Every structure is written in structure tokens, then in C-alpha cells.
Image 1 (cartoon, rainbow, N blue to C red):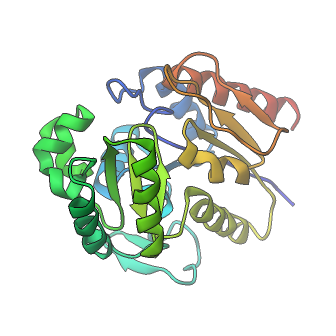
Image 2 (image 1 turned 60 degrees about the vertical axis):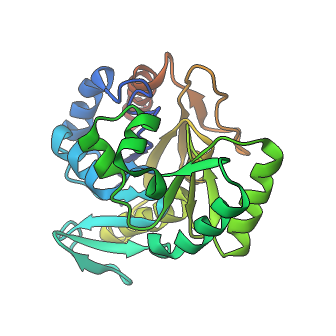
Length: 277
């Protein structure tokens, strides 16, 4: 029986720089993965339009996971079978794991009344506010606001009030995920839940062959995914701690910051992989 190789990566702060969203240092390794026919799966808090743009830039044709595990998108015909629970959406099949975005609107409205000035959410900030909070150009900010399942929040208040915010969201059946600069409100899912589902589809497509995978991330919302893979790569960024994992084996830290650390870490993984194959 053969083996399946797979790389799944967070974007902001990992493959993409937090400062300018560039990935120059990672380009040669992205190209190498494509040459080796190792799928590179984007797993992000970003929206479908944002990830589609990056896929087009990088020539990526593989499945991807949006909005912190809220949904998996599979290109139609990517597998020779149609996974259960998927529905067609344009050129893709979509497997959802979270309620739609408008499900959280009443919860956020109530929280704004209870905690005025404590937070800004994307739906209330609008494109101009999102651009101000993220540093994105207006076009990119508009794509960041095309959310299907989740709501990003920039927390401005105290830690004690944050606890009340989280409790209110949980009481409404949601979860609050901590990313690099924002919290995200979504259903009870995670990058790990969505990724495990997708990895299973790769196993099925390859007649049960074992998957040798690397997951890459830099934030707390990446932990469920990093715990799920055979190997895990942590990406350092200035001013923030590395993700805290329960696992201790097959975990290493990239050399450098952001995309540079991504490139060095994935390159090291490939070296080890082919050295022992």
C-alpha cells in the first residue's frame, strides 16, 4: 500500500506575513510541493473569496478550509467519489460545520447593547472599518467581509469583560476562537474538526493508504489542527507566544518569522520525509 503526503497550513502569520500579507520567502517551497504532487491545503479564518484569490495567485488547485473550520471546499471532480454531506456551490462541493453568519447577528446586537465600545465586529464596522483594523486595501477588506458562517471581532475591552462576552456567545450555541489579532464567533467546530474530515477523504480516495501529513500554524485557533497531524510545525511571530500543544512528539519550530519560518520548516519536513522514504 502506498502513502499519501499532505501539508495543511494556516495563512495569516504562517504562510502570509502579518505585516503585509506577502509570502515571498515561501514561494519556492510552494512550487516544490506542487512539483512533488503534495497537496497544499489552505486552512484559515479567511473567507472563500480571499482564499480563492490566493489559490489563483499560487496556482493552487486543492481543497481548502474557510472561516476557522466552518466549511471545507472540494473542487468538483477532485476525488473520484462525492463525499457524504456535501452540497454543490459553484465549481465546488461544500461540507459545512457551522450555522450561517446571520445566525450570530442577534447575539452581537445584544452584546453591543450590553458592552458598548468593548469590541468591533466586521458586520458593524463595514469595509472602511475592516480596512482600518486589518491594514487591508478596500478590495481585500470587502472580500474579508464576505463571510458565510462566522464573525470576526476585535476586542477592545478588559479581560474580565471578555469572559462575559465569551459566556454569552457560548450560551447562544457558539464558540469564540482566538486568532492572531481577532476573535472569531462561529459554530462548535474548529480547524481540527474540518481538517480531520478532509484528511479522511484523502484516505478513502487512496484505498485507505496512510496519510503522512504536516500541519502548520502560529495561533491558538490552529491548535486543534496541529494536534491532529502526524507532524506539526509551529511558526514564530514577534510579540506573541507559540501555540501551546499537549503533544510533544513530532513537533518543531520554524527558523525565522512568519513565511521565512514556514519555508524553513516545510523544507526540513520534506528533507526528513524523503530521507526516510
